[in-house]
Length: 76
Image (cartoon, rainbow, N blue to C red; front, top):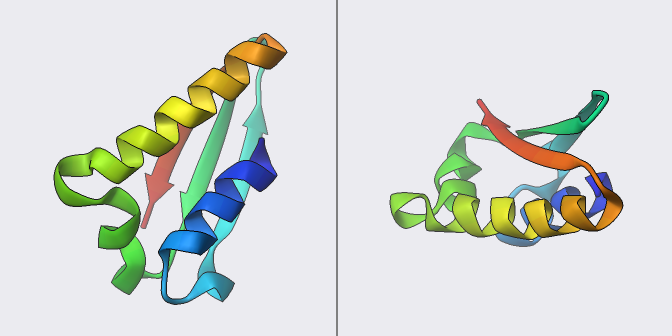
């Protein structure tokens, strides 16, 4: 799932080298912390958060398949 988040983010931003994803694994929940360049933050979030919401939906569906709750946090 980490690779999925990284691939989606790199496809959206102008500076793909600045994309980093950290996975914090819990018992039933996995938290993915996505960091991008500050100039690319708006591209990852999207208008009214639609792009971020779509990424979270895809991640949630993937998490359901493996039996864990997946959470995406976009950090500055």
